[in-house]
Image 1 (tube, helix red, strand yellow):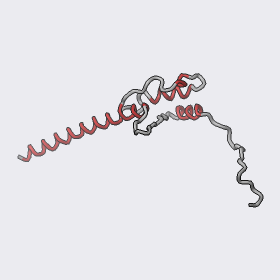
Image 2 (cartoon, one colour):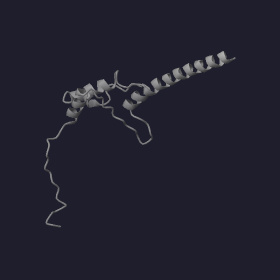
Image 3 (cartoon, helix red, strand yellow):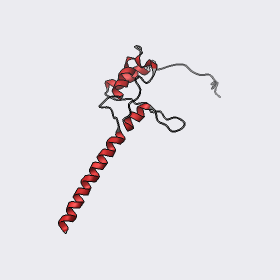
Image 4 (cartoon, one colour):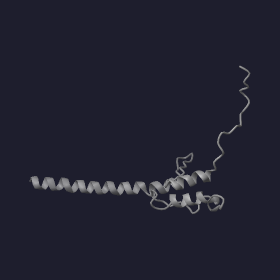
Length: 117
């Protein structure tokens, strides 16, 4: 094939490697939150997603290297992702708002039928 060996891998890199902690630092700088989502083989969700959806706080720290000084952005991101204003208890909040709207809707309907009598 035109003298090209397809089994030979090229290792030429056009950009320098970026560490995960640098990426997390960039997200923090742009006021973004990175929430890891874990789902096991039995459909159970991980502690960070559980907190986002149900408000159940994860264990502190979630993994041993969270306090590692070589990854300061990872620790900062964990703090940002597990404290307000990060989304915590989305389902609880949605349920409360839905109930409030139902009560308000019920009162409006009750008042309109009372005045029609």
